[in-house]
Image (cartoon, rainbow, N blue to C red; front, side):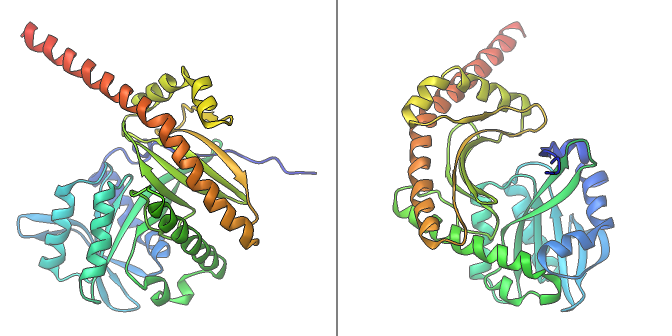
Length: 330
């Protein structure tokens, strides 16, 4: 008899940790081992809110296996230049070796900045961009999930084998190889914003208007391609997808296939996607799936980008109109 399975969903991060310093940073400090497991280090907390001139870094820890200083800067908002600047200030002021930036949403330019720092600083410095998620199965307690978006060159070869389970290492290597080639081919095919592989089970291939992006993701032996609407405002994300659904038949006709319009009240992000089956052990199928992923991404972009641009322009006009009305009343 097949066991009944639960539904995995992403929980609004603010429902778990309402405030960054009082709740999230405190939780990270109290559960530093969970973060350490995610990056293959044994971390020991040293202090919180450590002064660096006029600023203070959220957490100072130590990688005890290598006796290296670790600084951790947390955000519960989308990454910004202010936190990047502080991160560099803390790195210089404390002469830190391992620098970790945690946020629920990384701007592409900030993820690229972490890549650049790893490529252009000396080998004593290791920079990590880590996305924090909260996941829940049905009505279970939310669980934290750290997703590595950017990490040092050669980091996977150098992390302690004891800190990495063999299955997870093999899984990450597969994704690095698969998405590494997919990203390179996508950029050659004109999807110039395609990310570089981070060893995770998904890859962003393009950025669209209205806070949306196109991503490819593995789910067991199924490859998904979708448009993900990921503004920080849950109600706005829902409104955008509902607006798109008014044009559902025309969009599916342009793409030539039905789509899964995955509208949910239980998460901030909204999404619409399609999929294809692929055997991960079959190199021919893997190669064909990359071709499929690039083709469907271009179709999704052609169908959704003009509509998202129009929706975003309409939202901007309404916001300006409301501001003008408020100003006139004043």
